[in-house]
Length: 344
Image (cartoon, rainbow, N blue to C red; front, side, top):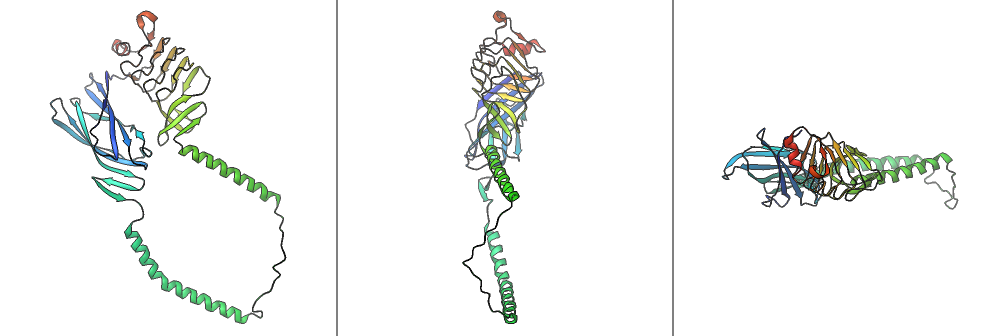
């Protein structure tokens, strides 16, 4: 069971750069182990894909004194154009840290790099253009000599030929019957092209449907569930839907659904109002690492059994859903402390 006893979401407005903005961060605090972690949420404000970034994090104590400085590097694909994203890795900070400041150091996009306020174009550079032009000038004499040799050889062949030119009837049309197998191959080629185009379009689309689930791309192959069209009442949410990794259940995804039993087989973030007013929902189970935001299961009045031993539950995540005294609800967990965090 995770021992994080305090989970705090903090808005961040002191943005270091307009290219990539830190909009908020979540602090996970473990008083028993004296540990503290931070998860960041950024916005890519550029109309290009963000391929990697570096930023500096300064940590301050309660007296606003600098206690530690570190550089965080993400060198893999992070986000699409003008898209919010949450890097997977948590940053461990000092237990005495009460506030932070963030400064962007470097960012790499599709067509340019940004570093400490300087821009570098990733496209075709002037140096390459100059070298290519110089090479072309050097090759011109060689090409000219080659053409002259080809012309001389052609003239020699014409002199040796008995007929200076050949006359043929251009009015006669030749009709060729293509074999049946060629037509079959052509049909299969067209079908393969259409299917490949549909697949590529689906992979590139930000919002799409996979089976009974409505999904949108978070980053790379990671997706969030934002809707459910199925009729299954005993629902198992898998680690993968198709070729995509499920990392988030978006707000309103299962709002007022008829689901009565939910099992999570994936490490996932459940946003506020994801299961709002699911009055048929009775049981929630999972052995995975799950973070449930405040009001994640809001208004689930018949929810009586919750078994998520590895979950991090924010205060109010089961607001209006469980009342141990009146509903005789059961919450299977390891300690009394964990139970008190769930029921306010």
